[in-house]
Image (cartoon, rainbow, N blue to C red; front, side, top):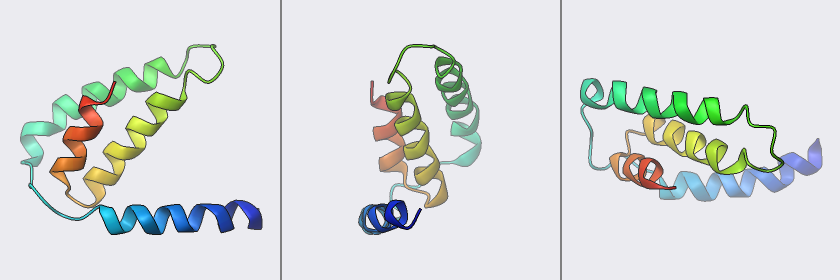
Length: 82
């Protein structure tokens, strides 16, 4: 567990430096669209194909980071990623 934490903390610190509040998006306007997209991504996690979950999980994590820091640029990048 300590090894995982040692490898994860620098990555999270790097992401924290990149993500900042910019290009604020109106919460009510994007709430339903983002919720529907995350629902579709969550449904795609049910596929029993090895490593097919990674792109979906990464997009959900980026959307979560974007919502936590009110980063509209990251939200657009996460939603436009394939």
